Length: 138
Image (tube, rainbow, N blue to C red; front, side):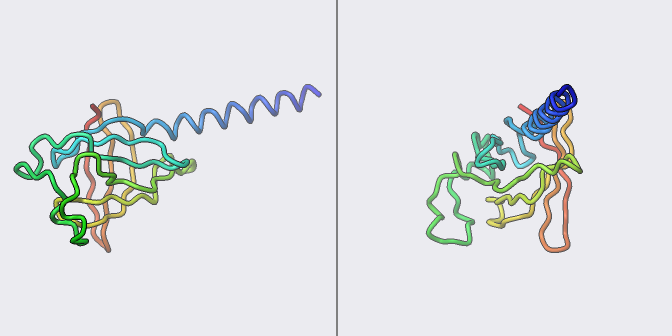
């Protein structure tokens, strides 16, 4: 009986610890293109929306570079630009995400590889090209 109780407690602690690590990504970040975003949990994955423009692209407030012309009048503020991030417990990274870049009207693959005290390190890729950026925590 003691072995079952101890095993159950260890399993619960492991599950809680992994859930807390996955949620470490939740928060607000300032991107190099001047946008501020909020990353939050949604349906057991993580997504992000624009929460401030900060003079983005010389005052651009609408999504006029979107390849879908019906979205050209959509406001950027509040727009969900990150979808589908999942926490990979083995690598301790958030993977399989997509990020919409309104400055180019393109969707990129997104992975978050490291969380530091004041920033996170992200890797965006399209086809064979990739770029590593640091987003500042707000």
